[in-house]
Length: 288
Ligand code: C2E
Ligand code: CA
Ligand code: CA
Image 1 (cartoon, helix red, strand yellow):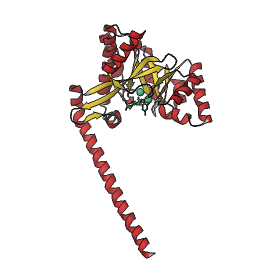
Image 2: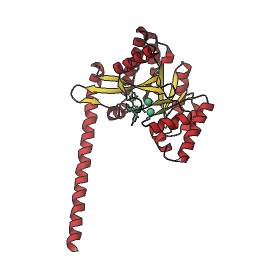
Image 3: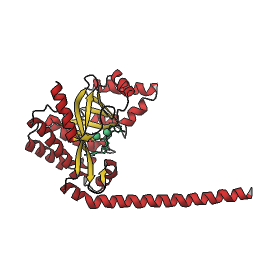
Image 4: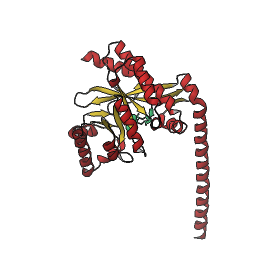
């Protein structure tokens, strides 16, 4: 009996030590990662290591591409591909996200222009607008310069905005952008703070249903009813509805049955290099 108690004590002590070592290692690694990003982010811009990936959006009924979302990837020459969740939180803290967003917005405008020049009918491309832009007016000037310089129609560049703790701030910026004539998508609907409130106060055009929200809603009859009500509400409010993170046939069928036709997710296509998306568009063009 005594032996067993001693053994348990020893094991517990060992596991505490192992845990502490584990957290220490993790902490060291995340500090190292932060330092790496901070030291390399400027070079990444100048050496064009950031890449715009595009993820198609589909109409379920037509089974065709109706748009795409621009998503940043960092292709580092030694470290390889770095995904947004590894660097966006850090560059949002230090403000560098502004530069990265401007870079991707420009890539999106150039892509649209390239399609026009080659007479490929293109679809709208949506770009992410970090919450860091909400507090200043610079982004409005950057956007209008990009539109003017590339000469693309404004309606082809759509803006995705995520709700934040400060919905007043989101609302104010959204009104400004709306006045400028942009199409606004409310990103991650249902994942966060006060989705319904913000809908009331902000002139969004399209609701993007968050992946988690949709997943949870699919699990029960009650959830499906809520989803149905969201679809009917968006219709009554004259808002578009797009479901993201769609991964299964079941989800597609459910979405179709509640009247949500626009989808984005691995079931249809993963984010891809812009060249690949261009080929997809070309194929769709020639099929028409
Ligand atoms: P988000 O704007 O909600 O983008 C959707 C994320 O879901 C993307 O992750 C996309 O690759 C992923 N996704 C798409 N379909 C599926 C699916 O069927 N299943 C699953 N599990 N995931 C799916 P990604 O590209 O890693 O981007 C993560 C987040 O980083 C984005 O979430 C966005 O908040 C941010 N982000 C990405 N690019 C940019 C950018 O250029 N600017 C800003 N400000 N933020 C960006
Ligand atoms: Ca987004
Ligand atoms: Ca989203």
